Image (tube, rainbow, N blue to C red; front, side, top):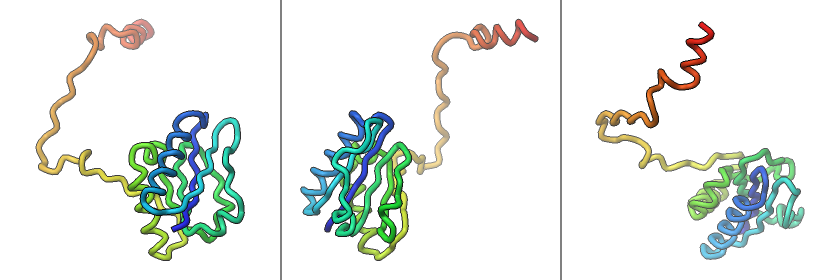
Length: 148
């Protein structure tokens, strides 16, 4: 399957580069053809061509900044964060492929697996232990007392 992707973070130096490399490597391992554009404070690197966009069956946008979607009219778009692409590019690609195969032309957010974050056995969460000193002796508490 032909994929195009954009990774973008505010600086575009490290995280968006790692996300792009991870998407590229993982897509190729999964047997897909992918072109990845990296956006950051310095502009776009490896900018997607109109031909690449036209040939793509799905668009993946993993960004922590605003990305213009004007170029992708009529294409299904899978969106997520840079962290998604860095930590689990395989899931991002799998969901993008499923979106393309569904025939949908809408923008869909990545479905985050929350099984680890939810407490399924309904046991009460342990109370968090306070770190640091006595809050009544903190700077804000003292200022509040001073100005009241």
